[in-house]
Image (cartoon, rainbow, N blue to C red; front, top):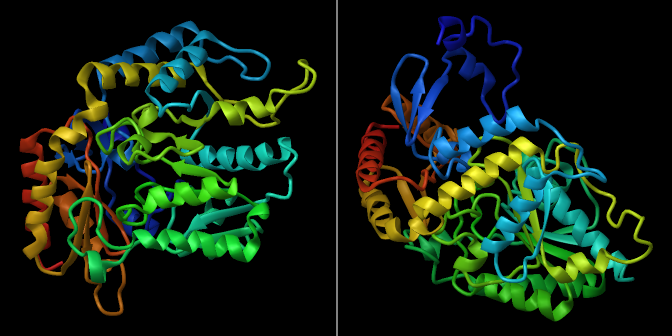
Length: 441
Protein backbone atom coordinates (compact mmCIF):
# COMPACT_ATOMS: atom_id res chain seq x y z
CA UNK A 1 0.00 0.00 0.00
CA UNK A 2 1.40 3.39 -0.98
CA UNK A 3 2.29 6.10 1.51
CA UNK A 4 -0.36 8.28 -0.09
CA UNK A 5 -3.04 5.82 0.95
CA UNK A 6 -1.48 5.15 4.34
CA UNK A 7 -1.08 8.79 5.35
CA UNK A 8 -3.47 11.27 3.70
CA UNK A 9 -1.83 14.67 3.35
CA UNK A 10 -4.99 16.62 4.19
CA UNK A 11 -7.59 15.62 6.81
CA UNK A 12 -9.74 18.76 6.65
CA UNK A 13 -12.55 17.73 4.29
CA UNK A 14 -13.92 14.76 6.24
CA UNK A 15 -16.21 15.83 9.12
CA UNK A 16 -15.92 12.65 11.16
CA UNK A 17 -18.92 11.10 12.97
CA UNK A 18 -19.08 10.89 16.78
CA UNK A 19 -15.46 12.09 16.90
CA UNK A 20 -13.53 14.86 18.63
CA UNK A 21 -12.45 16.12 15.20
CA UNK A 22 -9.92 18.72 16.34
CA UNK A 23 -8.14 16.31 18.67
CA UNK A 24 -8.12 13.53 16.09
CA UNK A 25 -6.69 15.66 13.31
CA UNK A 26 -3.81 16.74 15.53
CA UNK A 27 -2.93 13.10 16.28
CA UNK A 28 -4.62 10.86 13.68
CA UNK A 29 -5.32 7.21 14.41
CA UNK A 30 -5.58 5.41 11.06
CA UNK A 31 -6.23 1.76 10.30
CA UNK A 32 -4.92 0.51 6.96
CA UNK A 33 -5.46 -3.24 7.28
CA UNK A 34 -7.17 -5.92 9.34
CA UNK A 35 -7.16 -9.69 9.73
CA UNK A 36 -9.08 -11.90 12.16
CA UNK A 37 -8.65 -10.29 15.63
CA UNK A 38 -6.27 -7.46 14.75
CA UNK A 39 -6.14 -4.13 12.96
CA UNK A 40 -2.96 -2.77 11.37
CA UNK A 41 -2.25 0.93 11.89
CA UNK A 42 -0.74 3.33 9.37
CA UNK A 43 2.55 3.14 11.31
CA UNK A 44 2.64 -0.66 11.14
CA UNK A 45 1.43 -1.63 14.63
CA UNK A 46 -1.03 -4.43 15.45
CA UNK A 47 -4.11 -3.45 17.51
CA UNK A 48 -6.28 -6.10 19.15
CA UNK A 49 -9.93 -5.44 18.31
CA UNK A 50 -11.77 -5.36 21.63
CA UNK A 51 -14.97 -3.92 20.16
CA UNK A 52 -15.65 -5.89 16.95
CA UNK A 53 -15.15 -2.61 15.09
CA UNK A 54 -18.33 -0.87 16.24
CA UNK A 55 -20.11 -3.93 17.66
CA UNK A 56 -20.37 -5.35 14.14
CA UNK A 57 -17.38 -7.49 13.06
CA UNK A 58 -18.66 -10.59 14.85
CA UNK A 59 -16.81 -13.09 12.64
CA UNK A 60 -13.49 -11.27 12.71
CA UNK A 61 -11.84 -9.28 9.94
CA UNK A 62 -11.39 -10.09 6.25
CA UNK A 63 -12.95 -13.53 6.42
CA UNK A 64 -12.56 -15.42 3.12
CA UNK A 65 -16.14 -16.60 2.55
CA UNK A 66 -17.45 -13.07 2.94
CA UNK A 67 -14.88 -11.34 0.76
CA UNK A 68 -15.20 -13.99 -1.95
CA UNK A 69 -19.01 -13.74 -1.94
CA UNK A 70 -18.75 -9.99 -2.46
CA UNK A 71 -16.18 -10.39 -5.24
CA UNK A 72 -18.29 -12.93 -7.14
CA UNK A 73 -21.51 -10.96 -6.78
CA UNK A 74 -19.94 -7.69 -7.93
CA UNK A 75 -18.94 -9.39 -11.18
CA UNK A 76 -22.31 -11.04 -11.74
CA UNK A 77 -25.05 -8.59 -10.71
CA UNK A 78 -24.04 -5.28 -9.16
CA UNK A 79 -27.46 -3.70 -8.61
CA UNK A 80 -31.12 -4.60 -9.05
CA UNK A 81 -34.09 -2.33 -8.30
CA UNK A 82 -35.98 -3.37 -5.20
CA UNK A 83 -39.33 -1.83 -6.18
CA UNK A 84 -41.58 -4.21 -8.18
CA UNK A 85 -38.50 -6.27 -9.08
CA UNK A 86 -36.21 -8.65 -7.24
CA UNK A 87 -33.16 -10.89 -7.43
CA UNK A 88 -32.68 -14.41 -6.05
CA UNK A 89 -30.26 -13.65 -3.22
CA UNK A 90 -32.69 -11.26 -1.51
CA UNK A 91 -35.18 -14.11 -1.13
CA UNK A 92 -32.54 -16.68 -0.23
CA UNK A 93 -31.19 -14.43 2.50
CA UNK A 94 -34.64 -13.72 3.94
CA UNK A 95 -35.32 -17.45 4.19
CA UNK A 96 -31.97 -18.06 5.86
CA UNK A 97 -32.64 -15.28 8.35
CA UNK A 98 -36.08 -16.47 9.44
CA UNK A 99 -34.60 -19.94 9.90
CA UNK A 100 -32.43 -18.66 12.77
CA UNK A 101 -34.87 -16.04 14.07
CA UNK A 102 -37.15 -16.59 17.08
CA UNK A 103 -40.16 -18.73 16.26
CA UNK A 104 -42.90 -16.79 14.52
CA UNK A 105 -40.67 -14.05 13.11
CA UNK A 106 -41.38 -15.12 9.55
CA UNK A 107 -40.92 -12.00 7.44
CA UNK A 108 -38.03 -9.60 6.78
CA UNK A 109 -37.74 -6.03 5.48
CA UNK A 110 -34.28 -4.86 4.38
CA UNK A 111 -32.59 -1.60 5.33
CA UNK A 112 -29.09 -0.16 5.12
CA UNK A 113 -28.25 0.49 8.77
CA UNK A 114 -29.43 0.10 12.32
CA UNK A 115 -30.84 3.61 12.26
CA UNK A 116 -32.93 2.75 9.20
CA UNK A 117 -34.02 -0.50 10.81
CA UNK A 118 -35.41 1.45 13.75
CA UNK A 119 -37.20 3.94 11.50
CA UNK A 120 -38.67 1.03 9.56
CA UNK A 121 -39.84 -0.75 12.70
CA UNK A 122 -41.52 2.37 14.07
CA UNK A 123 -43.31 2.95 10.76
CA UNK A 124 -44.41 -0.67 10.60
CA UNK A 125 -45.82 -0.42 14.11
CA UNK A 126 -47.80 2.73 13.39
CA UNK A 127 -49.05 1.48 10.03
CA UNK A 128 -49.99 -1.93 11.47
CA UNK A 129 -52.45 -0.42 13.93
CA UNK A 130 -53.90 1.80 11.22
CA UNK A 131 -54.27 -1.20 8.90
CA UNK A 132 -56.21 -2.92 11.68
CA UNK A 133 -58.55 0.06 11.92
CA UNK A 134 -56.94 1.14 15.19
CA UNK A 135 -55.39 4.41 14.05
CA UNK A 136 -55.75 6.06 17.46
CA UNK A 137 -52.58 4.20 18.48
CA UNK A 138 -49.93 6.76 17.56
CA UNK A 139 -47.75 6.99 20.65
CA UNK A 140 -44.31 5.42 20.93
CA UNK A 141 -42.55 4.59 24.18
CA UNK A 142 -38.78 4.37 24.48
CA UNK A 143 -36.47 4.39 27.47
CA UNK A 144 -34.08 6.79 29.16
CA UNK A 145 -30.48 6.12 28.06
CA UNK A 146 -31.77 4.07 25.14
CA UNK A 147 -29.92 4.25 21.82
CA UNK A 148 -31.83 3.61 18.62
CA UNK A 149 -29.67 5.21 15.97
CA UNK A 150 -29.41 8.80 14.81
CA UNK A 151 -32.43 9.42 12.59
CA UNK A 152 -35.33 11.47 13.90
CA UNK A 153 -37.47 8.52 14.93
CA UNK A 154 -34.54 6.83 16.63
CA UNK A 155 -33.40 9.83 18.64
CA UNK A 156 -37.02 10.59 19.56
CA UNK A 157 -37.56 7.21 21.20
CA UNK A 158 -33.93 7.13 22.30
CA UNK A 159 -32.90 8.61 25.61
CA UNK A 160 -29.29 9.76 25.34
CA UNK A 161 -29.29 13.50 26.03
CA UNK A 162 -26.31 14.43 23.86
CA UNK A 163 -27.94 12.78 20.86
CA UNK A 164 -31.21 14.69 21.34
CA UNK A 165 -30.56 18.16 22.68
CA UNK A 166 -29.42 19.85 19.45
CA UNK A 167 -32.31 18.80 17.24
CA UNK A 168 -35.44 20.61 18.30
CA UNK A 169 -38.73 19.05 19.36
CA UNK A 170 -38.21 15.70 17.55
CA UNK A 171 -41.28 13.47 17.10
CA UNK A 172 -44.38 14.21 19.11
CA UNK A 173 -46.33 11.56 20.99
CA UNK A 174 -43.24 9.92 22.51
CA UNK A 175 -42.73 9.01 26.17
CA UNK A 176 -39.89 7.29 28.00
CA UNK A 177 -39.60 4.64 30.66
CA UNK A 178 -36.81 4.91 33.25
CA UNK A 179 -33.52 3.16 32.55
CA UNK A 180 -32.54 0.07 34.53
CA UNK A 181 -29.12 1.10 35.87
CA UNK A 182 -28.92 0.93 39.68
CA UNK A 183 -25.22 0.87 40.59
CA UNK A 184 -25.97 1.45 44.27
CA UNK A 185 -27.65 -1.99 44.35
CA UNK A 186 -26.13 -3.85 41.39
CA UNK A 187 -22.49 -2.78 41.18
CA UNK A 188 -20.15 -5.53 39.98
CA UNK A 189 -23.02 -7.83 39.00
CA UNK A 190 -22.20 -10.90 36.98
CA UNK A 191 -24.86 -11.39 34.32
CA UNK A 192 -28.41 -10.17 34.95
CA UNK A 193 -28.61 -7.98 38.06
CA UNK A 194 -30.79 -9.10 40.93
CA UNK A 195 -32.41 -5.73 41.59
CA UNK A 196 -34.61 -3.58 39.37
CA UNK A 197 -36.90 -5.96 37.50
CA UNK A 198 -39.91 -4.22 39.03
CA UNK A 199 -39.01 -0.98 37.22
CA UNK A 200 -40.87 -2.45 34.24
CA UNK A 201 -44.06 -1.48 36.06
CA UNK A 202 -43.27 2.11 35.08
CA UNK A 203 -44.63 1.17 31.66
CA UNK A 204 -47.98 0.59 33.33
CA UNK A 205 -47.83 4.11 34.76
CA UNK A 206 -47.24 5.55 31.28
CA UNK A 207 -50.13 3.50 29.92
CA UNK A 208 -52.39 4.82 32.67
CA UNK A 209 -51.33 8.39 31.87
CA UNK A 210 -51.97 8.21 28.11
CA UNK A 211 -54.42 5.27 27.90
CA UNK A 212 -53.45 2.08 26.14
CA UNK A 213 -55.68 2.93 23.18
CA UNK A 214 -53.19 5.64 22.13
CA UNK A 215 -49.96 3.58 22.38
CA UNK A 216 -48.65 1.77 19.31
CA UNK A 217 -45.33 0.33 20.43
CA UNK A 218 -42.64 0.07 23.07
CA UNK A 219 -39.02 -0.14 21.89
CA UNK A 220 -36.07 -1.26 24.01
CA UNK A 221 -32.62 -2.73 23.55
CA UNK A 222 -32.57 -6.08 25.36
CA UNK A 223 -29.08 -5.03 26.48
CA UNK A 224 -28.54 -1.29 26.19
CA UNK A 225 -25.17 -1.17 24.46
CA UNK A 226 -24.11 2.26 23.27
CA UNK A 227 -25.11 3.97 26.50
CA UNK A 228 -22.57 1.87 28.40
CA UNK A 229 -23.79 -1.75 28.56
CA UNK A 230 -26.84 -1.78 30.84
CA UNK A 231 -27.90 -5.38 31.53
CA UNK A 232 -31.63 -5.98 32.08
CA UNK A 233 -32.45 -6.97 35.67
CA UNK A 234 -33.95 -10.39 36.19
CA UNK A 235 -37.60 -10.49 35.12
CA UNK A 236 -37.55 -7.03 33.51
CA UNK A 237 -37.98 -8.00 29.86
CA UNK A 238 -40.53 -10.67 30.74
CA UNK A 239 -42.61 -8.06 32.58
CA UNK A 240 -42.48 -5.66 29.62
CA UNK A 241 -43.75 -8.43 27.37
CA UNK A 242 -46.58 -9.21 29.77
CA UNK A 243 -47.71 -5.59 29.98
CA UNK A 244 -47.54 -5.04 26.21
CA UNK A 245 -49.54 -8.20 25.53
CA UNK A 246 -52.16 -7.21 28.08
CA UNK A 247 -52.74 -3.85 26.39
CA UNK A 248 -52.33 -4.75 22.69
CA UNK A 249 -49.08 -2.81 22.37
CA UNK A 250 -46.32 -4.01 20.04
CA UNK A 251 -42.96 -4.78 21.65
CA UNK A 252 -39.91 -3.96 19.54
CA UNK A 253 -36.50 -5.34 20.44
CA UNK A 254 -33.65 -3.29 19.01
CA UNK A 255 -31.08 -6.03 18.43
CA UNK A 256 -28.71 -4.08 16.22
CA UNK A 257 -26.00 -4.87 18.79
CA UNK A 258 -27.24 -8.09 20.42
CA UNK A 259 -28.26 -9.83 17.18
CA UNK A 260 -26.11 -12.53 15.55
CA UNK A 261 -24.50 -14.25 18.49
CA UNK A 262 -23.35 -11.53 20.83
CA UNK A 263 -24.94 -13.17 23.88
CA UNK A 264 -24.45 -16.81 22.89
CA UNK A 265 -27.72 -17.25 20.99
CA UNK A 266 -28.62 -15.96 17.53
CA UNK A 267 -30.75 -13.22 19.10
CA UNK A 268 -31.21 -11.80 22.57
CA UNK A 269 -34.90 -12.66 22.33
CA UNK A 270 -33.85 -16.30 22.42
CA UNK A 271 -31.24 -15.78 25.12
CA UNK A 272 -33.76 -14.12 27.46
CA UNK A 273 -36.66 -16.29 26.23
CA UNK A 274 -38.87 -13.28 25.50
CA UNK A 275 -40.63 -13.00 22.16
CA UNK A 276 -41.09 -9.47 20.77
CA UNK A 277 -43.32 -8.54 17.84
CA UNK A 278 -40.59 -6.82 15.84
CA UNK A 279 -36.78 -7.16 15.90
CA UNK A 280 -34.38 -4.66 14.37
CA UNK A 281 -30.93 -5.77 13.22
CA UNK A 282 -27.91 -4.55 11.23
CA UNK A 283 -24.18 -4.62 12.19
CA UNK A 284 -23.46 -8.35 12.48
CA UNK A 285 -25.78 -9.16 9.57
CA UNK A 286 -22.94 -8.56 7.10
CA UNK A 287 -20.10 -8.65 9.64
CA UNK A 288 -19.87 -4.89 9.22
CA UNK A 289 -18.41 -5.30 5.73
CA UNK A 290 -21.22 -3.65 3.74
CA UNK A 291 -24.05 -1.51 5.16
CA UNK A 292 -27.20 -3.57 5.61
CA UNK A 293 -29.97 -4.08 8.12
CA UNK A 294 -33.03 -6.27 8.48
CA UNK A 295 -36.29 -5.92 10.38
CA UNK A 296 -38.08 -9.09 11.44
CA UNK A 297 -41.85 -9.10 11.94
CA UNK A 298 -44.39 -11.73 12.89
CA UNK A 299 -46.72 -13.30 10.38
CA UNK A 300 -49.63 -11.58 12.12
CA UNK A 301 -48.14 -8.15 11.41
CA UNK A 302 -47.21 -9.02 7.83
CA UNK A 303 -50.56 -10.60 7.01
CA UNK A 304 -52.49 -7.60 8.31
CA UNK A 305 -51.10 -5.57 5.41
CA UNK A 306 -51.91 -8.17 2.75
CA UNK A 307 -55.38 -6.89 1.90
CA UNK A 308 -57.05 -4.95 -0.89
CA UNK A 309 -56.46 -5.20 -4.65
CA UNK A 310 -53.42 -7.34 -5.46
CA UNK A 311 -51.93 -4.74 -7.82
CA UNK A 312 -51.73 -2.14 -5.03
CA UNK A 313 -48.63 -1.54 -2.90
CA UNK A 314 -49.39 -2.77 0.62
CA UNK A 315 -46.82 -0.71 2.55
CA UNK A 316 -45.40 2.53 1.18
CA UNK A 317 -41.88 2.22 2.47
CA UNK A 318 -38.46 1.11 1.24
CA UNK A 319 -35.00 2.22 0.17
CA UNK A 320 -33.08 2.38 -3.10
CA UNK A 321 -30.65 -0.14 -1.63
CA UNK A 322 -33.14 -2.45 0.12
CA UNK A 323 -31.74 -5.93 -0.45
CA UNK A 324 -28.82 -4.72 -2.56
CA UNK A 325 -27.33 -7.77 -4.34
CA UNK A 326 -23.77 -7.26 -3.05
CA UNK A 327 -25.02 -6.65 0.49
CA UNK A 328 -27.12 -9.83 0.29
CA UNK A 329 -24.08 -11.77 -0.90
CA UNK A 330 -22.06 -10.41 2.02
CA UNK A 331 -24.80 -11.40 4.44
CA UNK A 332 -25.03 -14.91 3.01
CA UNK A 333 -21.26 -15.30 3.28
CA UNK A 334 -21.50 -14.07 6.85
CA UNK A 335 -24.25 -16.55 7.75
CA UNK A 336 -22.18 -19.34 6.19
CA UNK A 337 -19.21 -18.33 8.32
CA UNK A 338 -21.31 -18.16 11.47
CA UNK A 339 -22.77 -21.61 10.78
CA UNK A 340 -19.55 -23.38 9.84
CA UNK A 341 -17.68 -22.02 12.87
CA UNK A 342 -20.53 -22.19 15.38
CA UNK A 343 -20.22 -18.47 16.08
CA UNK A 344 -23.88 -17.80 16.88
CA UNK A 345 -23.53 -19.81 20.09
CA UNK A 346 -19.79 -19.51 20.74
CA UNK A 347 -20.21 -16.66 23.24
CA UNK A 348 -21.92 -19.10 25.59
CA UNK A 349 -18.76 -21.24 25.61
CA UNK A 350 -16.46 -18.31 26.46
CA UNK A 351 -18.80 -16.23 28.64
CA UNK A 352 -17.50 -17.55 31.95
CA UNK A 353 -13.83 -17.04 31.05
CA UNK A 354 -14.65 -13.58 29.71
CA UNK A 355 -16.56 -12.72 32.87
CA UNK A 356 -13.71 -13.77 35.15
CA UNK A 357 -11.17 -11.79 33.14
CA UNK A 358 -13.36 -8.70 33.14
CA UNK A 359 -14.09 -8.79 36.87
CA UNK A 360 -10.41 -9.33 37.65
CA UNK A 361 -10.04 -5.58 37.01
CA UNK A 362 -12.24 -4.72 40.00
CA UNK A 363 -9.21 -3.67 42.08
CA UNK A 364 -7.91 -1.17 39.50
CA UNK A 365 -7.91 2.54 40.39
CA UNK A 366 -11.10 4.53 39.67
CA UNK A 367 -13.19 1.45 38.76
CA UNK A 368 -16.65 1.87 40.31
CA UNK A 369 -18.60 -0.83 38.47
CA UNK A 370 -18.14 -3.79 36.14
CA UNK A 371 -20.96 -5.59 34.33
CA UNK A 372 -21.21 -8.29 31.69
CA UNK A 373 -23.40 -10.67 29.73
CA UNK A 374 -22.37 -12.97 26.89
CA UNK A 375 -19.33 -11.47 25.17
CA UNK A 376 -20.15 -7.93 26.25
CA UNK A 377 -18.54 -6.08 29.12
CA UNK A 378 -18.39 -2.63 30.67
CA UNK A 379 -16.04 -0.97 33.12
CA UNK A 380 -17.41 2.20 34.67
CA UNK A 381 -14.88 4.74 35.93
CA UNK A 382 -15.25 7.55 38.41
CA UNK A 383 -15.20 10.82 36.46
CA UNK A 384 -12.48 13.42 36.85
CA UNK A 385 -13.95 16.31 38.84
CA UNK A 386 -15.23 18.96 36.45
CA UNK A 387 -14.15 16.99 33.36
CA UNK A 388 -16.74 14.32 32.61
CA UNK A 389 -15.79 11.73 29.93
CA UNK A 390 -12.10 12.68 30.07
CA UNK A 391 -10.94 9.71 32.18
CA UNK A 392 -12.44 7.15 29.81
CA UNK A 393 -11.18 9.05 26.75
CA UNK A 394 -7.68 9.04 28.23
CA UNK A 395 -8.03 5.27 28.67
CA UNK A 396 -9.07 4.96 25.02
CA UNK A 397 -5.98 6.85 23.86
CA UNK A 398 -3.59 4.90 26.09
CA UNK A 399 -5.16 1.59 25.05
CA UNK A 400 -4.66 2.48 21.40
CA UNK A 401 -1.01 3.27 22.11
CA UNK A 402 -0.64 -0.15 23.75
CA UNK A 403 -2.25 -2.01 20.85
CA UNK A 404 -5.84 -2.40 22.09
CA UNK A 405 -9.07 -0.98 20.68
CA UNK A 406 -11.76 -0.19 23.25
CA UNK A 407 -14.97 1.84 23.03
CA UNK A 408 -15.93 4.57 25.47
CA UNK A 409 -19.19 6.35 26.21
CA UNK A 410 -19.23 8.90 28.98
CA UNK A 411 -16.82 7.51 31.58
CA UNK A 412 -17.60 3.91 30.66
CA UNK A 413 -15.36 1.51 28.75
CA UNK A 414 -17.39 -0.89 26.61
CA UNK A 415 -16.04 -4.15 25.22
CA UNK A 416 -17.50 -6.50 22.59
CA UNK A 417 -14.79 -8.51 20.79
CA UNK A 418 -15.23 -10.55 17.62
CA UNK A 419 -16.83 -13.89 18.41
CA UNK A 420 -13.73 -15.71 17.09
CA UNK A 421 -11.80 -14.53 20.14
CA UNK A 422 -9.68 -17.19 21.90
CA UNK A 423 -8.75 -17.39 25.56
CA UNK A 424 -5.25 -16.07 24.89
CA UNK A 425 -6.80 -13.00 23.23
CA UNK A 426 -8.96 -12.49 26.32
CA UNK A 427 -5.84 -12.67 28.47
CA UNK A 428 -4.07 -10.18 26.21
CA UNK A 429 -7.05 -7.82 26.21
CA UNK A 430 -7.47 -7.67 29.98
CA UNK A 431 -3.70 -7.64 30.57
CA UNK A 432 -3.33 -4.54 28.41
CA UNK A 433 -6.41 -2.96 29.93
CA UNK A 434 -5.05 -3.51 33.44
CA UNK A 435 -1.87 -1.66 32.43
CA UNK A 436 -3.99 1.20 31.09
CA UNK A 437 -6.15 1.46 34.21
CA UNK A 438 -3.11 1.37 36.49
CA UNK A 439 -1.46 4.18 34.53
CA UNK A 440 -3.01 7.19 36.31
CA UNK A 441 -5.65 7.91 33.70
